[in-house]
Image (cartoon, rainbow, N blue to C red; front, side):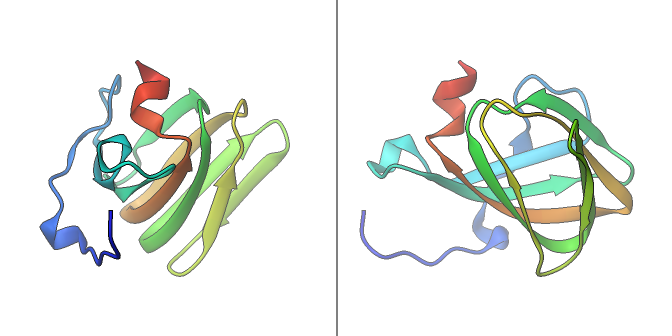
Length: 116
């Protein structure tokens, strides 16, 4: 893959795999492009919660709204321009605040095959 530029407006968001919550994701770069990472966007509805054990290392950049991530180590909250790192193997609960949230993410390795 060559150098690319992406925007959420060009991204097709789908319900996060295995989730019933109002949480949507859209990859713009993934295993189909030949690189080592997945890059995409996420959208969390107001007050939505997602609990999982991380199958990959995940970096989440908050673009709009606020997100809290809780684990055994405690809780961190991030707003626009802030980054949350969630290491592989960590059990986390991700919660969008009342305004919901839009995020960008980078995972290593690719998250979709890791959830298969």
